[in-house]
Amino acid sequence: IYFVRVLVDVVRTPPNFLKTPPLYVSYWPFWLRGWPRYCRSLLLERTRGQQFVEDAKKAASVALCGLLVFVPSLRRAIPEAMLASVAIAFIFTETVGDCWKTGAERVVGTIAGSVYALIASTLYADLAANWLLRTCAVLAMTAWASANALFFSYPNVVAAFTAAGIVVQVAVEADQFREGHAEFLSVHAIKMNALGAIVFFLVETQFFARSSRKVLEASVPDILYSLRDALDQALDPFVARETNATPENLAAAAEPQKKKTHKPPRPRPTQPPPQASLRTRSRAQSPADADSFYLTVLDDDLDDDFDHGNFDDFDFD
Image (cartoon, rainbow, N blue to C red):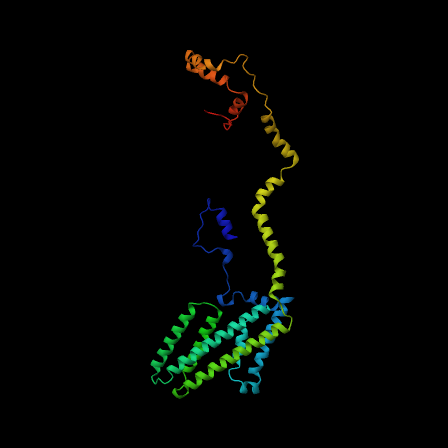
């Protein structure tokens, strides 16, 4: 509202952009702004219909993998069980096809990152100096991240941060446990990510499965309606010009053209001069009389076109 008002009055009152408009001044501290809106969206704006079903399936998938962490017996029996819930959080989709594609990409990226971290950590696991170990870890991760950055996709991103997480944990271990810890983390990262992808795929496909084809078929009418509205808006000035032409307006517009078309011809000269004597008579007359003489022998249709500015029918030869 402020900028519209300023732009409307820009000629009479030059805008001062250094002055803060009163409309945007807030007397609340910065860390207190927006909390009513956040609380309202959290408590009042709830999902409904198909979106509620999709959210419930995601929550159920995370809860199933969360049991591996919150149940003490399972937590002691399954190391690194938290990675299954983390994997599900990174492959949230709403259709069966997307679930399969994203889950497979997650597993492939995890395998690539874990294998690279295992190989890199094994190569410099016996280094005694901490600074040399950390330097090798940084160089290995820089090279791996640079290689994945050339093919920026979801598997490459997963491979990059999976390897980084394993290498960092291995680097802080004691010398005698680095190689064993690298193998332990790599194997369990692959197992838990695969388990999370499988759990999410089973929940997505077995409970209220949603096909991408059906979603696309349902969205086609909305796309076509949006395209129709855009075309109507773009062609409205041209269509309105035609639709506003009522029969009365068309008749009124055609009346001058009709009068112009059926204009009575001018009378012909009573005794047109012979063509052979044109040069003789033009020499005997003055230049002004010669011009008038040439105009009088023109055809009536061409003379009428000349009066109305239509020179297409003239043969100047």
